[in-house]
Length: 181
Image (tube, rainbow, N blue to C red; front, side, top):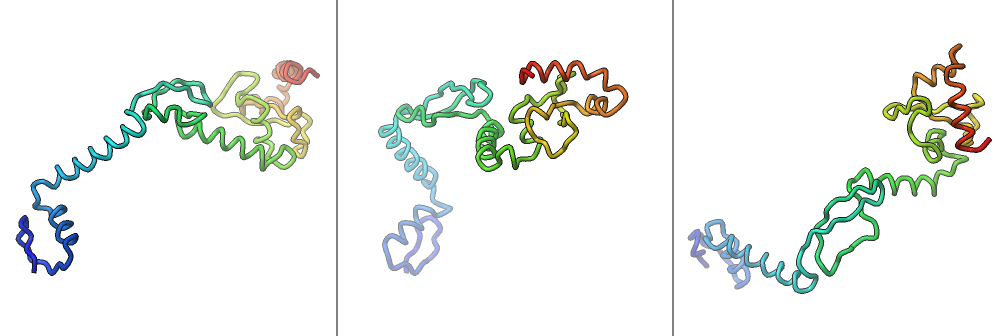
């Protein structure tokens, strides 16, 4: 039988490593935290020697071009070709690339096609929060980008009402500027 010098419990350990592990990790061991700190310091020192110290670098978000700070080791910077400031910026690139690869314009949803070619804002009032997509020729099977126009719900309703004349000029001008037709 073996007795722990910290907690005075007796154990039936037969191997020296079992005794050492209990002694090192015993809750009553006053040097327990120092032991962990020494191990962490040793690992940090080894990493510093191999990869350099940790520094703060300013990088630019690949998607929104906003500058932000990253912490990296000297010999690893830059770790990536592209840095993203947030998960949503990173997803917008990956999601867009995946959608373009697997959902071509002929099979993609009309809204997906519209946002590939048009900015997501109403062409009449620049509303960005709630934006609908209008089919110019009223054929909902024709998802050609030239047939799709982003409009806020209010102006989309205008197009389908007797007040169409109030927004028609702006829509025609947008189409002419965008597609040259």
